[in-house]
Image (cartoon, rainbow, N blue to C red):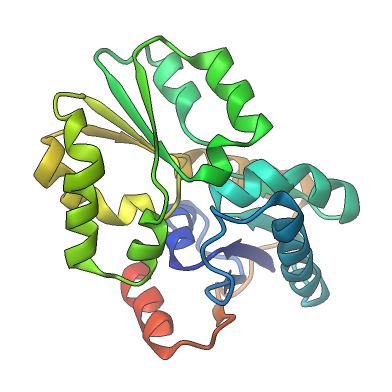
Amino acid sequence: MIGIFDSGIGGVTVFREILKTLPNYDYIYYSDSLNNPYGDKSQKELLAIVDNIVNYLVNRGCKIIVIACNTASALCKEYLREKFNVPIIAIEPAIKQVYDKKTPGKTLLMATKGTMDSEKFRELYEKYDNKEIYLQECAGLADLIENDDQEQIREYINKYLKKYQGVENIILGCTHYPLIKEELKEVLGDVYFYDGAKGVEKELERVINKIGLEQSKGSIEFIDSAKNKKKIDRFWSLLN
């Protein structure tokens, strides 16, 4: 069993990538919409929240935990790795991908306040900044995406991101953001997107092989902490 968690529906963008190559394992996806959003919470608050989630998943028999949330990864992964005796796989903003590929043109990096304020993010940015990256803290955007508020999402993009017209690349530093690629393209044009989902899939495959986790029937269990039927239905529609 593999446990995956996020502050809500956004982690489905990571889960879809995982299922492309690793479908024959049992998964529990924990959507913590009761505590959404994570991006505006303090590290102390977030540690208490994710501690409970991972404890639950481990008690359910999960042998590997995937943090499908950039904010929780940045602020909590070291704590979780020290406390729990299972592999903890974390996602990171795809700054290194842009650096490694020597991507031409200007790049916009979108992330939550929690991610951008984290020490891990600062380390990544300082190490891989190619001097052509604009940073944009997107407070509140993940919440709009979580609630699927299309009108407000478009208003938000026009208000806060339209000024970046002309960039060629966008780093999506929150797992919710890939769900609005088309809306971003409407305003910013035919940009190229980077996110950390593929890196998570590759690391999960490596860990599975390392610990010898056996394949199973490929079951998927979805848990929403708020027991919101609309979000449960949306998860399955996005996953398929």
